[in-house]
Amino acid sequence: MHRRVEMPASVFGGKKAEFYRGVVVGRGPCARNGKESPGYVVRWHDGDSNCWLYEDLEPNLVPSTFRDHEWELVRDIKIREDPVAFPAGWRSAKLYRLRAVRKTACIYFGGEEYEGLDFTYTFVGGVLRDGEGEEIELVASVAQLS
Image (tube, rainbow, N blue to C red; front, side):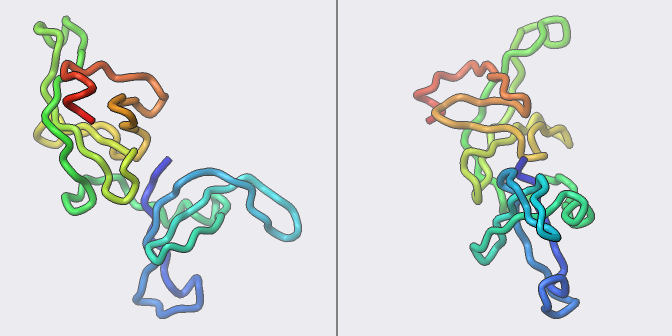
């Protein structure tokens, strides 16, 4: 859910060359033309939050890429994998947290391979979950990861 947004400031009456940057933090009802429709809540870099209809927001969503300054390394981990693909049954990776929304996580396997850059992975209470809410089994203990 936590997708990045870059909206031209001109949408808000600002200068064309400036941008507002934010993160989609949830869903909520948005009012438009006197009626409510489903929408997305955006938390902007200035701390303000408001709701946008998807069709208005979609052109301003930023492609998911790893940016070092936005993520904090939690630790090296090993993840349970299919033993057919990984004979040892475990795969080494690095676990990162998003600095702006600390429960948001991503996994880095090396090279250009990441999971969770769409801001759907979470790491809360030592439990790592994928975008569908499924727990991802780690070889390290919860105490080591907290």
